[in-house]
Amino acid sequence: QQQVKQSPQSLIVQKGGISIINCAYENTAFDYFPWYQQFPGKGPALLIAIRPDVSEKKEGRFTISFNKSAKQFSLHIMDSQPGDSATYFCAASDGNQFYFGTGTSLTVIP
Amino acid sequence: ETGVTQTPRHLVMGMTNKKSLKCEQHLGHNAMYWYKQSAKKPLELMFVYNFKEQTENNSVPSRFSPECPNSSHLFLHLHTLQPEDSALYLCASSQGRPRDSYEQYFGPGTRLTVT
Image 1 (cartoon, one colour):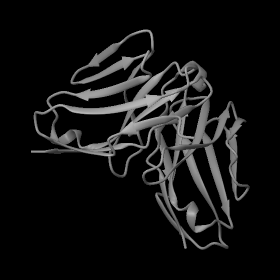
Image 2 (cartoon, chains in turn blue, purple):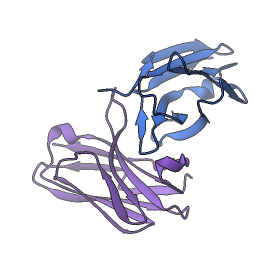
Image 3 (cartoon, chains in turn orange, red):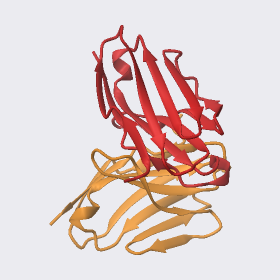
Image 4 (tube, rainbow over the protein chains, first blue to last red):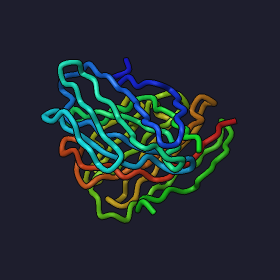
């Protein structure tokens, strides 16, 4: 059973636009929610993370929105740039291990 | 440079071969992990080592055999693999265990093809 469901599978955005990727979970034991960015030929790298005691976290152009009651969280990339083109993974941890989404391939068109 | 290196980067092996994947972390971390990454699937945690002791084995077939001789090195020994084992194998390390929510640093992966 997939612990973290991620959508969309792929996303195409114009330069300067907003990219939005969504994730949902069921396990209320999850208490840490990171997002990873992966470029071709590289391993995933932590982008931004949030704990469920806050509803939003912003770092530069990247924002996580967290809805604890709906058990959903999303990544917003403002002013998307071609260099943001990569695969993005959401994840959740219950303290024992991380559970990852299936990934979203983002393409930002110049 | 992520501080986690993996060799080889690409590997093609037959179903009867025996090979090993190597991971080395230069970050002074205590925990190391093996993940399997297949297209359109979530990253699958395979093994976790904390201070050289295996703490997780997520029902991985015995044809995959991990070895952690010290906190800086991690190996994945492969034998009699199946074509469905073809995937990107990622190594990661962290300062603490997932319970501590420490960031995991990933290596670039080994692209394995089983013919």
